[in-house]
Length: 315
Image (cartoon, rainbow, N blue to C red; front, side):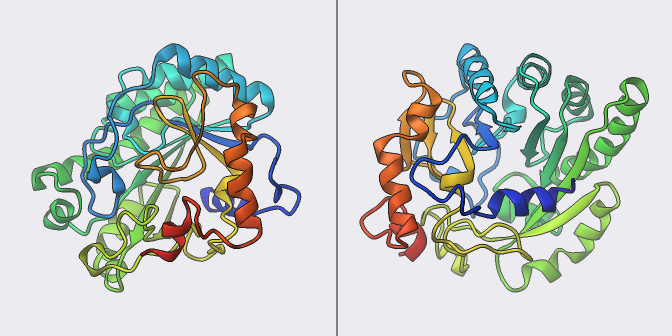
């Protein structure tokens, strides 16, 4: 299945799941680290609103196994941080694939630390999908967007190109094939045209490239650099969803490095925390009173007075 088909499936709210206590989600993301080596202006991470640390290995193992036994089919070994900063990323992938039996393990990266050696270790561990978040037209634009030195831009390009060679080598020796993707954020009217040449160059090295709208990250980045982000998380350009009710409350789980269960794709400050999975079972958090009340507000299409109000209104 292509990545756009997967995105469209996970962002489509099935009426059977549109209730206060939906069944276990098919897709779960577990944050291995909250650290990130970029300071992208359109991401709430650069606001530094929470502690940046790594997940405890034993907590990861417990949660990955628990949600798989409940029926989760897909595991993203990332959330808001950059997972290639985590030393035990390949071990996390191997545990998910071989010990827990996840059919699909996926990862999104900014690409800077996705060196051939690290990517090969992840692919050999069983990674099913590696996506590069690519949002720059060149070295200067890279620095403007990420705050990282311009000299790092060629490293990102080299890593994207090398990933295809690494995949071929791993597939020849193991038979396992990891899909390679790239996405770009259309954060203003000129962005897509500005990036056309750069996207054309990397597209030859990935299986699929697609565009995303600019998300406002729960209101934290609304209006930054005169951009106009979209409310909520409407999915990808070409198959946009309504912001309310927000699909993410019903279809996908987000677990932060410290065991927090969040209701939001972009919970940079903890306001969407619905449970503490260090002390709770997953389903107790998934069906917690706080989560039920927030889902109820979305189903009524009235999120005034909730944690989602600012995200939807973007004030």
